[in-house]
Image 1 (cartoon, rainbow, N blue to C red):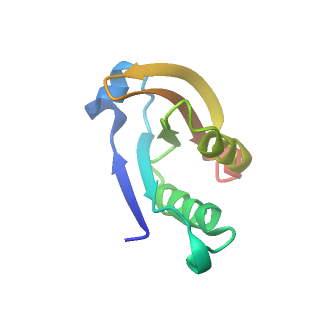
Image 2 (spheres, rainbow, N blue to C red):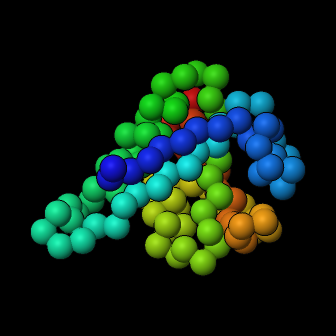
Amino acid sequence: PAALFQTYEPDADPVGACYDVQPGDFGVHLLIAPAEGEGAVKGYTDALLTAFIAHVFSDPAHLRVVVEPDARNEKAIARMVRIGFELGPEIRKPEKTARLAFLTRAALGLA
Protein backbone atom coordinates (compact mmCIF):
# COMPACT_ATOMS: atom_id res chain seq x y z
CA PRO A 1 0.00 0.00 0.00
CA ALA A 2 1.06 3.57 -0.69
CA ALA A 3 -0.83 5.07 2.25
CA LEU A 4 -3.11 4.31 5.16
CA PHE A 5 -5.74 6.83 6.25
CA GLN A 6 -7.45 6.40 9.60
CA THR A 7 -10.10 8.56 11.21
CA TYR A 8 -11.14 8.61 14.84
CA GLU A 9 -13.27 10.44 17.38
CA PRO A 10 -10.85 12.31 19.66
CA ASP A 11 -13.11 12.04 22.70
CA ALA A 12 -12.96 8.23 22.37
CA ASP A 13 -9.18 8.18 21.88
CA PRO A 14 -6.34 8.74 24.37
CA VAL A 15 -5.51 12.02 22.59
CA GLY A 16 -8.80 13.37 23.92
CA ALA A 17 -7.30 13.46 27.40
CA CYS A 18 -4.53 15.77 26.12
CA TYR A 19 -6.61 18.75 24.98
CA ASP A 20 -10.08 20.29 25.27
CA VAL A 21 -12.06 18.32 22.66
CA GLN A 22 -14.63 20.51 20.90
CA PRO A 23 -17.91 19.40 19.30
CA GLY A 24 -17.18 18.57 15.67
CA ASP A 25 -13.54 17.58 16.22
CA PHE A 26 -12.47 14.67 14.03
CA GLY A 27 -9.05 13.04 14.25
CA VAL A 28 -7.02 11.71 11.35
CA HIS A 29 -3.87 9.63 11.02
CA LEU A 30 -2.10 9.44 7.68
CA LEU A 31 0.73 6.97 7.16
CA ILE A 32 2.50 7.27 3.82
CA ALA A 33 5.06 4.88 2.38
CA PRO A 34 8.43 6.50 1.69
CA ALA A 35 8.82 7.85 -1.83
CA GLU A 36 11.90 6.31 -3.36
CA GLY A 37 13.51 6.02 -6.76
CA GLU A 38 11.62 6.26 -10.02
CA GLY A 39 8.26 5.76 -8.30
CA ALA A 40 8.51 9.05 -6.40
CA VAL A 41 5.91 11.58 -7.55
CA LYS A 42 6.46 15.23 -6.62
CA GLY A 43 3.47 16.64 -4.73
CA TYR A 44 1.95 13.22 -4.04
CA THR A 45 1.77 13.64 -0.27
CA ASP A 46 0.19 17.10 -0.47
CA ALA A 47 -2.37 15.87 -3.02
CA LEU A 48 -3.18 12.83 -0.91
CA LEU A 49 -3.58 14.87 2.27
CA THR A 50 -5.73 17.46 0.49
CA ALA A 51 -8.03 14.74 -0.85
CA PHE A 52 -8.38 13.11 2.57
CA ILE A 53 -9.16 16.42 4.25
CA ALA A 54 -11.78 17.16 1.60
CA HIS A 55 -13.30 13.75 2.32
CA VAL A 56 -13.42 14.42 6.08
CA PHE A 57 -15.00 17.85 5.58
CA SER A 58 -17.59 16.41 3.17
CA ASP A 59 -19.48 15.56 6.37
CA PRO A 60 -20.88 18.88 7.66
CA ALA A 61 -20.72 17.55 11.24
CA HIS A 62 -16.91 17.59 11.06
CA LEU A 63 -15.91 21.12 12.03
CA ARG A 64 -12.23 20.68 12.84
CA VAL A 65 -9.57 18.15 11.85
CA VAL A 66 -7.16 17.17 14.63
CA VAL A 67 -3.73 15.66 13.92
CA GLU A 68 -0.88 14.75 16.24
CA PRO A 69 2.31 14.01 14.32
CA ASP A 70 5.52 13.14 16.11
CA ALA A 71 6.97 16.44 17.38
CA ARG A 72 10.33 15.58 15.74
CA ASN A 73 8.74 15.23 12.30
CA GLU A 74 9.53 18.74 11.09
CA LYS A 75 8.60 17.90 7.51
CA ALA A 76 5.08 16.74 8.44
CA ILE A 77 4.52 19.71 10.73
CA ALA A 78 5.66 22.16 8.03
CA ARG A 79 3.27 20.46 5.59
CA MET A 80 0.37 20.86 8.04
CA VAL A 81 1.12 24.57 8.49
CA ARG A 82 1.36 25.03 4.71
CA ILE A 83 -2.10 23.47 4.29
CA GLY A 84 -3.58 25.75 6.94
CA PHE A 85 -3.37 23.86 10.23
CA GLU A 86 -2.93 25.91 13.39
CA LEU A 87 -0.29 24.44 15.66
CA GLY A 88 -1.27 23.51 19.18
CA PRO A 89 0.83 22.36 22.12
CA GLU A 90 3.18 19.43 22.32
CA ILE A 91 1.66 16.50 24.17
CA ARG A 92 3.21 13.38 25.66
CA LYS A 93 1.78 10.05 24.63
CA PRO A 94 3.12 6.63 25.63
CA GLU A 95 4.56 6.05 22.15
CA LYS A 96 5.78 9.57 21.32
CA THR A 97 5.85 13.26 22.03
CA ALA A 98 3.37 14.70 19.55
CA ARG A 99 2.46 18.15 18.29
CA LEU A 100 -1.25 18.84 18.12
CA ALA A 101 -2.49 20.75 15.08
CA PHE A 102 -6.00 21.81 14.10
CA LEU A 103 -7.63 22.67 10.78
CA THR A 104 -11.05 24.29 10.80
CA ARG A 105 -13.60 24.38 8.02
CA ALA A 106 -13.35 28.18 8.21
CA ALA A 107 -9.58 28.08 7.53
CA LEU A 108 -10.38 26.41 4.21
CA GLY A 109 -13.25 28.78 3.42
CA LEU A 110 -15.86 26.07 4.04
CA ALA A 111 -17.66 27.72 6.98
